Each structure stands twice: as C-alpha cells, then as structure tokens.
Length: 187
Image (cartoon, rainbow, N blue to C red; front, side, top):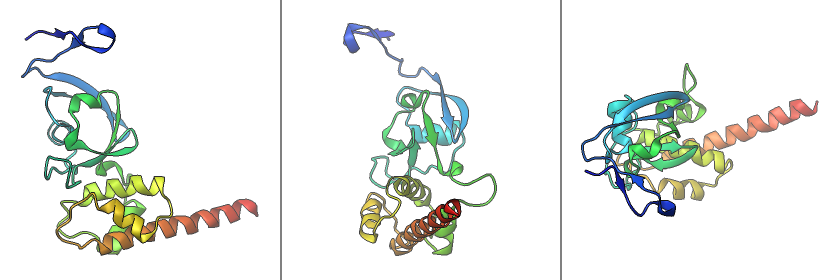
C-alpha cells in the first residue's frame, strides 16, 4: 500500500499506514510518558488495556453509548472506544488508575465507597472519570445536573441514586473545605 495520499491539508501528502503496519506512539498516561505499538485502526480503549496495561478502562458497547471506556484526553472526558490509538500521540490520557493519590483513594472514590455507589464495578471506572471531569467544570452541581451528566452512562446494578449522592457529597465537602481554607487565609 502507498505511504502517501493526495488530499491532505493544504495539498501536502498525508501519511497512510498499511493495514497491518504497527506504529509506535508515545503519550502521557496518568502523568507518565508511555510508548507502545498499535495498528492504524486500533481503538484507544484496546491500546490502553492490551498494550499499556491500563485495564481499568473497560470496553462495553464499543459504540460510545455505555460510557464504561471513559477516560480524560488532555483533561476532557472522552470515550476511548470512539478514538483511534494513533490519535493519542503526544496527548495526555488519564484513566481511573491515575485518579487516586499514590496511596488510598481520591475523595470521589471514597464517596463512591461510602455511598455504595457501585455494584459489579464494570461501569464504575468510566463513571468516576466522567464525574471527576464534571466536578472540575461544575463544582456545585444540582441533583438534576448530576443526573443529566450520568445519562451518558449505562449501569445495570445501582439505579444511579447512590452515584448521585456520592457526587453531591463530594461537591459539598469540597465547597466546605474551600470555605474553611478561605477563612484560614483571611485570618
């Protein structure tokens, strides 16, 4: 197969990978530079799991509907089953494995534990990644906003109520901690 094709941006030839050709890509995974090899049509979800060993990223529907494969790409929640691995070259990818500090759980993970917001756990990693992203963008969400955000995820076990409670709990605790730290700075 040809290595170039016409029609690339501004009339320059674009590189085309052969069907079974593997390319080395380098990305930042949970703050650490990592490299691996992938075929041109390999999904990011499969690359993360099978090449880089980030097995917390689950693959459910492979159509971007269930949300189990949600990761953060350059800080924004994205479905890794809808992205090719080659598109992650030189990008920052965060998975559930990077959500917690080196020891223990993140406040969001701890709230999920406290509120029993998981059952079988298959969807949990993706939901955690979406919730972490959402709480950074909307630090004080309403219950309706959290439910709307969660509508992009399929969970067959929890009924979502404990998940909503966990997210609202984290938002309230973060707000209270922010008020306490602001008062300490003013003193």
